[in-house]
Image (cartoon, rainbow, N blue to C red; front, side, top):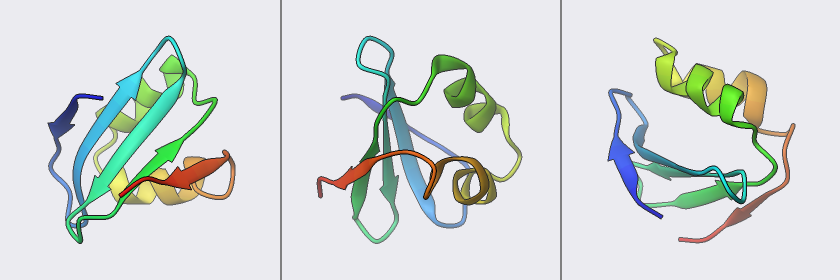
Length: 70
């Protein structure tokens, strides 16, 4: 999945695959997580958010199934 760099203090890049509704987040630590069943609208809200990390913590972490992939 192709990710794009984002302005964040702890998130390096974010990618999204609309066909599988998979959100991929790479942290500056090098850790990569995939979150599943994330709708395109929520992805767009994340990308437009002024604080990507805060948005991820509030709306995505612990709300969607995930897997650590890197």
